[in-house]
Length: 262
Ligand code: NAP
Image 1: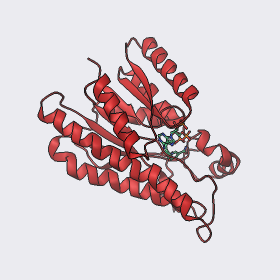
Image 2: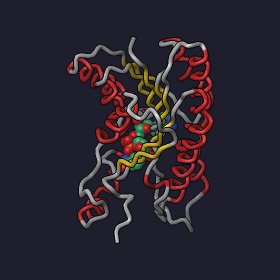
Image 3: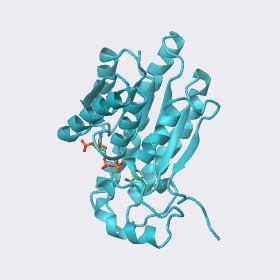
């Protein structure tokens, strides 16, 4: 029986990159998305194709659920319980940027609430729900190695004055990873934070030119954009169990952005 991964926000961008790498190594995948069903269908097809090309036979299912809404989080988990009866890997990836970047002296509460709800509160309570189920599965001896991954951002520590709401939501998510790592260690459930830098997706399209200039002028020691595949490979390494004595660790996938250079 294949291992099963739920990846939130997997219809496009980084989430799609993650499910494709998981399909390559033979994981069944649940592709959660918010509204873009066409993209979710494409991701399902790409996963099946990628798995086949790599000699694997997998199940790929899409499931629409807004992770900021409690009842929809419950429906998502219920769907996985009914369809698969177990879960081996949760990847909290879904997230949004502010609809409009605004200086912190002017930004409004509506944008703050939206980002906190989707980027921090949603994954926090989804993880609570799935952690309790994983604990049950572990104690029933029905599986041995469940794992949880949080996709945060360099914005968990880097200041962007025109999107304070995003930075705060990612700093909160980074703390959620540490909290669950500490709480779940006794059950043998490791928790990892994967921290992307500047990645080429729909999210960064509006700032493409500005980031091109910053990268060319040396913002990141590795002078190139990151790709969804870069993040997917880090998650696949975790999924394969290559960090068995680590929990709560941050894995930077940022071209060296985090280095302070004198
Ligand atoms: P993206 O291309 O905009 O894709 C966002 C994904 O999240 C889509 O699949 C979208 O579904 C889904 N989503 C949005 N709101 C959701 C909700 N309420 N419930 C469920 N799914 C939802 O973004 P991305 O660049 O891949 O970013 C993915 C994650 O990486 C985010 O958490 C982001 O903060 C983080 N990140 C990105 C970068 C970067 O440079 N791109 C850097 C650091 C961290 P639909 O297709 O249905 O809209």
